Image 1 (cartoon, helix red, strand yellow):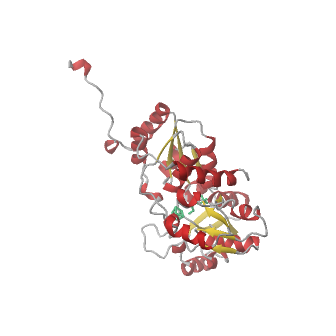
Image 2 (cartoon, helix red, strand yellow):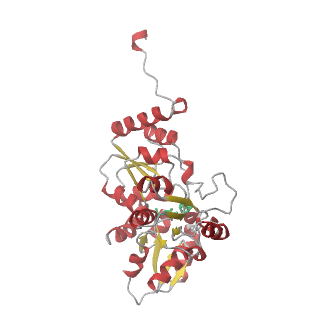
Image 3 (cartoon, rainbow, N blue to C red):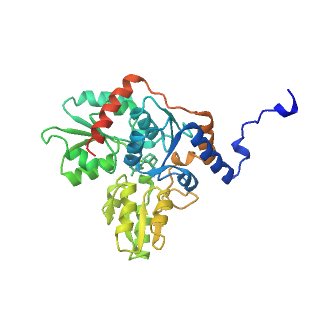
Amino acid sequence: MSIHAVQELPADPRSMDHDALVRGIRRLKRERNAVLLAHYYQTPDIQDVADHVGDSLQLAQAADRSTSDVIVFAGVLFMAETAKILNPGRTVVVPDLQAGCSLSDSAPAGPFAAFLEAHPHHLVVSYINCSAAVKAMSDIICTSSNAVRVVNSLPADRPIIFAPDKHLGAYVQRVTGRKLLLWNGVCEVHVDISIDKLKLLMMQFEDAKLIAHPECPEPILAEAHHIGSTSSLIDFVQRDPGQRYIVATEAGILHRMRAAVPDKHLIPAPAYANNTCACSECPYMKLNTLEKVYRALDTLQPEIVLPEHISIGAERALRRMLSLG
Ligand code: 13P
Ligand code: SF4
């Protein structure tokens, strides 16, 4: 090979700085005809290079509308699986296959199937934070944005199983007045928010309003001025005339929230765990990095692959939710 014919070696993302990674990701998105979706809990650098940033419902809707050849899902595995279920013909990749979810893990398919068998007359509402196999066993899916609407859409004379988050389920039960049979799952991040430290903060900042995600346990929700999904919490601080908020959810949300209300004071709710940021961080969401996003776009790996029989059942349950609007 002559010196003029030396092929350009593919760039190694390990040797690239932040700006080079962002340029590389933008170039690869064009070359692959790819869309990058990112959840509000992703790190700011990933959110800033994404095409859509949103909550689980908004990202499922964005995936459903997508016409791109490739979807890169910067979130956790159940979110990427949802994108694949809605787009069986497209390539869906994730930055890190280990990015699971404690809620999803709390409902393994085998025990869940046995539970449903023991309650054959119940309708099954599953929170989107569950595996594709659990979705396939469900009648309808919900997210934290639409859980109340989904439960209210079901016939009043049918008993309902709600899985896997018992705290979201209990919240929906309180709001709708419907009796729900709850699966015993929790989000390890939201149950780690310390109610004692929270109460001290509320005494320190008496004018602060507590806003909370419904995955938080009831004692936290009982103190909250506003309860809602990640997008609902961001909307609230924009609409509300207050100046100071204690934010009881994963700290990644603060990036968008600060951009939305730069003059307001946002205080992350403190966690029990002695972590570095004194706030609540999801260890699964935080497995994703800009470098891994670059690699996923470059190699189109790790790719989400689902068995067809699971995909078909899960799509039916997801589309029932999406049809509610
Ligand atoms: P949202 O539906 O509010 O985005 O919540 C997703 C999630 O994983 C919360 O822990
Ligand atoms: Fe799962 Fe909780 Fe992490 Fe959300 S914050 S992805 S529910 S572990």
